[in-house]
Image (cartoon, rainbow, N blue to C red; front, side, top):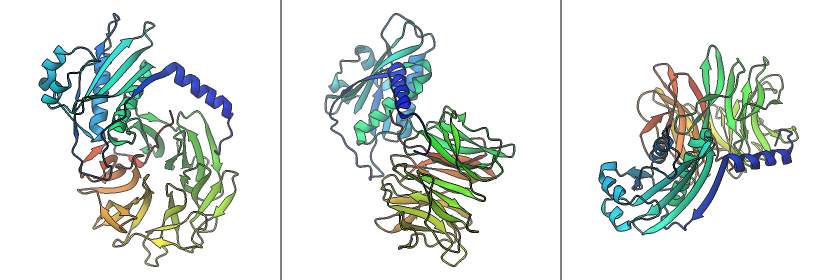
Length: 449
C-alpha cells in the first residue's frame, strides 16, 4: 500500500462493521450446475421468486419486503443469466405452499421453474434493521442449493440483496456475480470534472470528490478500497489517491508536468503511470517506496498503461509505428521496451485506451472504425480482434467487469456523453448515466467482505 495507516486498527474497525451491521449465517449445498463462461449464447435458467414472507408480528409499514424483492429480481435480470417465471404462472402454487422451507419440486418443475428462491424476513424490534433468510432450490434436480441469513441496518438493504444475488450467480457459474460492484466515472460540471460512484444497477449515485477542478482517469485499487486519479486542483496534473468514502486523500506523486493515466499492479505494490518529465510522455513504474522506474524510452508518445492480471505484462498506447497514429502494444512489466514489444492493433488509424480483461486472455480498446470510434476486443490466443459495439455514436474508454463478462464505456451521441454497459457477445446495451457529461468509467474489482 502507498498510504500509511494503522493496519491493526483498520482490521478491528472492519470486523466490528461486519459483526454489527451485516451478520450472515450460511448454509451451502454443492451446486450441480456449472455454466461455461466462455459460451456467449448460453440458454438462461428459468427462475421463480416468490413474495417475501414476513415472519413476525411487527408490521412492515415501509414495504421493505416488496422493495427487497424488486432489487433481487433486477439484479438477477441484469446478470443476464436468468429468465423470470411470471407471477400468474405460479401464483396458485405459491398460495398452497406458504412455507419457505418446504418445496414440491415436481409441481414447480411442471409450471416451468428450474430454480426457485423463497425468502422470509423479520423486522428488528429496535426498528433499526431487518433479518432476511434467503433459500435457493433446484427444482430440476430436486435439491436445496443455498441458504443465507443476513442481519442488516436499513441503509444496507441494497447491499444485502446484492450480495445474495451474487451468491446465486456463483451457484450457477462458479464465479461470483457483480451486483455488489460499483463504477467510478467523471462528471463534467461548471468547468470541472468530479469523480462520482454508482452501483452496478444504476442506483446510489454519489459524488466522491469536491476538487472544483479538472480530474482525469480514475482507477481502482485491486482491493476496491482506493481510487487513484489525476487532479489539477493544485494547478499541476498531480497523482492523487482517495478512499471510497472520500474521508482520506493524499498526493501520491507530484512532478512538474504530467502525472497521469495511473494503473495499479495486481499485487498493489506498484503503480504504472505516465510522466512528461523527459519532454515527452513516457510510461513509468512508481514503487511502494515512491521510487520511479522508467519503462519506455522512445521519442514518440507512450501512454495509457494497463496491467495483465498476472502482473507480468503491460499493454499501452504509442505512436511509435511511425505513421503518426496511436496503436496498442504489449511490453514486459519489468524490462519495458528495452525488451520485446509487440503490436496488437492493426487495420485502424487510431487505437487507444487498452484495458486488459480479468481473465487475462483479452484486451479491449478504443478503435476508429469509419468516422466513429468503437470498442474492439483483441484475443490473445487467436491474435484476432473484433468490433463489439455497433449503432450510432462513438464508443470509447472501455473498462471490464471483474467477472470478465461485461464492458463499460463512454458513448458520445449528439454531443452528449453517457456511460453504457454491454455484455461481451451481445449487441444490447444498458445506459447507466443520463447527465450527458459522463466520462472515463472504471469498474470496481470485487470488494473484500
